[in-house]
Every structure is written in structure tokens, then in C-alpha cells.
Image (cartoon, rainbow, N blue to C red; front, side, top):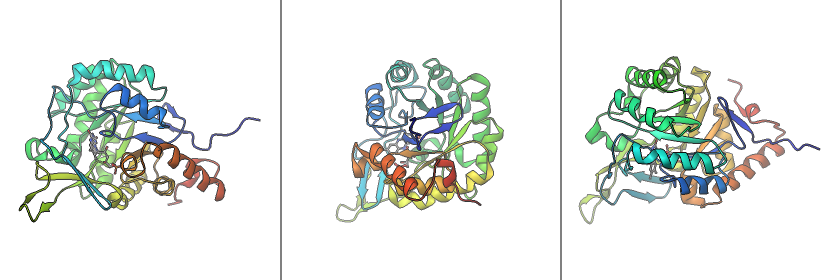
Length: 306
Ligand SMILES: Cc1cc2nc3c(=O)[nH]c(=O)nc-3n(C[C@H](O)[C@H](O)[C@H](O)COP(=O)(O)O)c2cc1C
């Protein structure tokens, strides 16, 4: 008898064996790490955001964690698009699950250039990171905080490459649904919400200086989950395209909450810090257990009625 996979889901034309997706910036700085995440059970994997040129990122310390909060100001360190292409290609050939290549740039033309190069590696999606808050001291307010800029980038990238596009949005806006609508109208194939919240700041009062060398950093971890759930809920009611729900998901119950808010898949990052490399498998078995116990036969049934 054929056993039905309760966890199968779709993101546009890509079928996922399960709805857990490795977040950009976690593990995935090279092809080996992406392949390892797939072996650890991820349904899809996202690479660290890559830009036009090699970038060192911010000086250390770049990450801190206390309680339910993770703060980072990694500063988009990456080897640049030319070096990233063979890494993505190796991941596409070796991961056995869809590979999402994350990119960023400082202008719409920059996104077009990086997308053009990265598309040659044939990732399942290119994710446009337009929402990193820890580089705004140097790059200005993220493009995803402005409907017109976000839509323009999506439109120009869509005009250049055939690869399906995910727009990764920022929670740091008064009306995320209107930005989601704009990127959908501009041709985005999916949305990922959310990138980190803030930026925030933590001061070491004994040393009388900020803990992060960059002084401010984006906030993630379980503390931001209610913001992520609200964003996903607002976006899902505004658009038809699939939404990846990201932000502080540690357990199957957290993932179920995201599916109820309207997500088709969930981004997993913080969980790797709090629960380790088994996170994907644990979260999947917990979702499955919840569904069986409560009589759900597919993920779509979890969505709130309104
Ligand atoms: C150390 C670190 C590095 C990150 N790097 C990126 C990145 O390069 N690109 C990106 O789009 N998001 C990046 N993020 C944001 C995550 O992908 C995710 O959107 C956010 O952390 C919320 O999910 P989480 O609580 O599960 O980590 C980073 C987050 C952390 C903690």
C-alpha cells in the first residue's frame, strides 16, 4: 500500500518532500554545508546571501544570544557572485532537494547582474534578500521597506532571468501586506517573511560599550515568532503566491502555527542553534504527529478559515 506523505508541499513548480527550508545565513555558506543540511532532513536549502563582489562583513563579535533572542550583524559577508556560481552548481547537483540561491545588491542593476550570474547554476529559486537590517548604517534603509523599490527590483530581475523568484520581506514596515502585493504584481513567484527584526542594540554596561562591533544588529530567535506569524497571516490574506514563514520556529507546533497563518513552508534557522542538527527531522515528526492526532490529512488543511 502506498503511504501518503503528509508533509509534501509545493512552492510554485518545486515539490518539497517536507516543508522545512534551511534559512539563508545558517550553515549554508558553501555547497558542502547546503548538502549537509539536505542530509539532515531539510526539504529545501537556502544559501547565504551573495552580492556582486566579495565582502568581508562586519568585525567580530557579530552574533550574540540571550534567552529567546539572537542578534546578528554578520554584515553580508560573502565571496561574490563569480565564486558563488560553482558553489551553487555543486549544491544543485549534490543536495537532492531544491536549492534556493539568496542574493543581495546595493542597486536594482546590481540585483540584475548577480541574478544573471547565479541563474547559470540553475537553482530552483533565486531569493532576493532586500531586507537585511544590519547593513543599513552603510547601505541605507532596505529596499523591502519601500513598495516601489521592492517591486522595481523584482520586475527587473524577472525580465532578466527565467529562474523563479522569491522576495524576502522585512517586518520593519507599517504595512507588509501592501509590499507583498506590490512584489506579487511585479512577478514574484513566492514570498519569504520575515528577515530579522530591528535593528536592535545591546550595551555591555560594565564595559560601557555596545556588545556587537557594528553596535546594532537584526533580531531573530523565538522572541520574534509572534511578529513573523502576524506578517505571514497579513501577507497570505493579500496575495495568491506561496509564502515561506520564517522567524523563530523551533518546534513542530511553531511550524503548525505558521501553516495556520497561511504559510506553505517554513524557514528553519534558530532551531539549529537551540535544538541542533536534528532540528529538521524533529520538527517534521512533530508536525506529522500533530496532524495525525488532530485528523489533518494535508498541510493546506491547517490554514485558518479566515
Ligand atoms: C547569523 C545570521 C545570519 C543571517 N544571514 C542572512 C543572510 O545572509 N540573508 C538573509 O536573507 N537572511 C539572513 N539571516 C536571517 C535569517 O535567514 C532569518 O530570516 C531570520 O534569522 C529569522 O529566522 P530564525 O529566527 O529562524 O533565524 C541571518 C540570520 C542570522 C541569525
